[in-house]
Length: 202
Image (tube, rainbow, N blue to C red):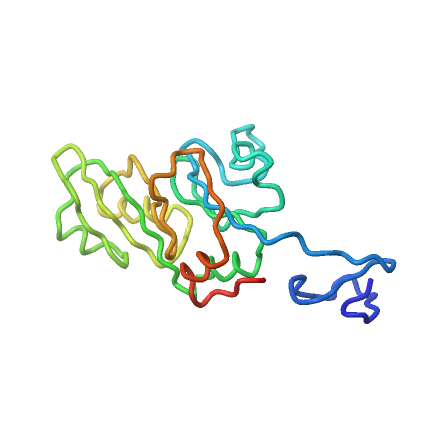
């Protein structure tokens, strides 16, 4: 293998494919075209390529549209909403790195009456009660990290079970009126506006 014309024999040699020219046996290996899509993940679908339990995956739903793409972070089985998939691994790594504090906004439904005082106690960047009753409460919550089941654990800590969870915004990208199971292409310019500090490969 040659990298930028230099012979490399170490299989552990690290490169950034988007920034170098790679050839094997004299044949150039071209980088796949840059693509990023915004997908409205339905509930009951897992964010993996294959599921040992045989459950439906986002790749099953997307089919050929997801070819060459990797999911940016995950949404759990019971969570719906905005999921990014991209061919740009530098972008994916930057967006999911907690140090960059990329905002994620969720619409949350929980059991019981969440008071304004309880909402203020939540370890969230923003927690706004939109509607509440003795039966259930609806809130908008913004987080700056993407830990597993973070929203559900947060509400459990104040005695409320999450019954519905949907991510509606990731950085500057919003789900809008995209229906569950639908997706759309995202341009480089959109990504640059949504994540101004992120590396976006050309």
